[in-house]
Length: 252
Image 1 (cartoon, rainbow, N blue to C red):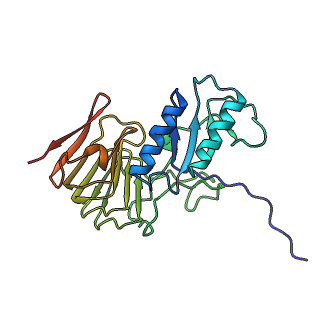
Image 2: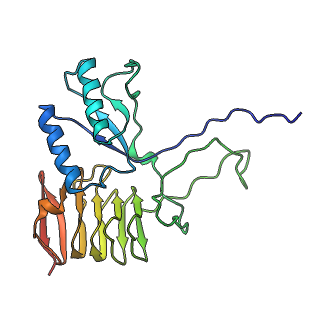
Image 3: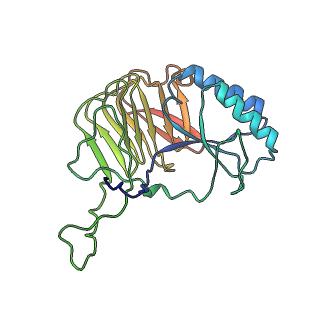
């Protein structure tokens, strides 16, 4: 009889987007509906955390909110801000002790990203170090602060680098997405979505040679194509934050 391998536990780290409702909830849901209408793909294939910190919600209020989000095809992975107590059946699990964003790691220098996939860090059980002395693991090489992509980003692809800037030497197609912990530099047309300062960097910027985005975001503040109107359309621009406002200015 073949011996079964022991049970093993492995860690995984993923980029999750946090939704933080603001009272009145009906109005907040209406604004969420407007965003989904302007950018239908914005919530697709994303891990969503619901942050109810500071809200005076009882159990029924929270159940109603989760139901409303479910109607909008927004699946909640977990709920933050309610303490460690289990809410019981019908609720996503409570989340506590979130780890710093630095726990996300980028590929090693020279590693290639699979086409159409966003790199995400994957923790695993320890393994013996190769070439180390006295059983000590060799120190990990420093993570790159910037990532340069020498090709366009095609529709459906997601490029994610949380440790610094992302530079795309081509264009970002409609339906594509670039997510950076720092700034985003696009040497072609931006027709998809660009999310800069994704880990909380208000000084991050988005720069491109031809500005035709579906959505841009900096440090959690976003504007869709409808919000932008014709501002900077088809021009070389930079987008930056001025307080709580995204400012678009020409580079010419």
